[in-house]
Image (cartoon, rainbow, N blue to C red):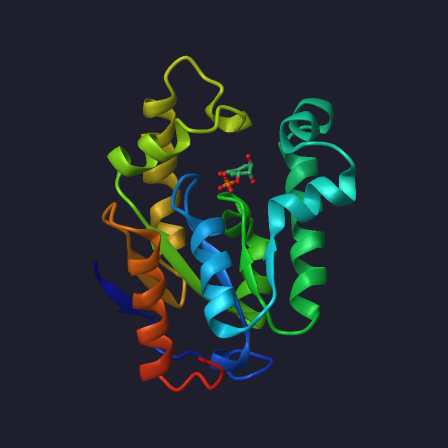
Length: 191
Ligand code: S3P
């Protein structure tokens, strides 16, 4: 596993290490599981943006895509993430496309500490196979779709404040790696 950090850049809002922690990365990268465990370790609330969207919309993500399309989903996603980031400090798992939306990415850069959970194709495909409901993978060749998304998205995910590689080991190893990094760089609320 490898951790890389972007140099500090002048942003608005709270110092980076006091902000909400926002996990970004592709479907299957482990954002929700790692986020929940990271939040527990830091004694912070945890939110899953997809679940918040489902609650706000009163339907599943799949139904939302089917009824209103992806553009409307991205608008709703941006509003939900903006609302969450305005609130008290927390850990937030975003859906895989959130950081690709310029407006959402700007919100996260200004108000969050972003962490990209980077994973390779084999791991992602193994993980997404466990849940068949992701609308973007309802294609004839989900692996080719995932490879295309990796090519399109990885350069943008790389703009996250921190990149953590997941090599298929336990989620807790990723959590420990993040905690070690936060601790080494001065985060105050580690138990
Ligand atoms: C999406 C990822 C999904 C969900 C939606 C779109 C994407 O979230 O937000 O299906 O664009 O990659 P997960 O990354 O949690 O699966």
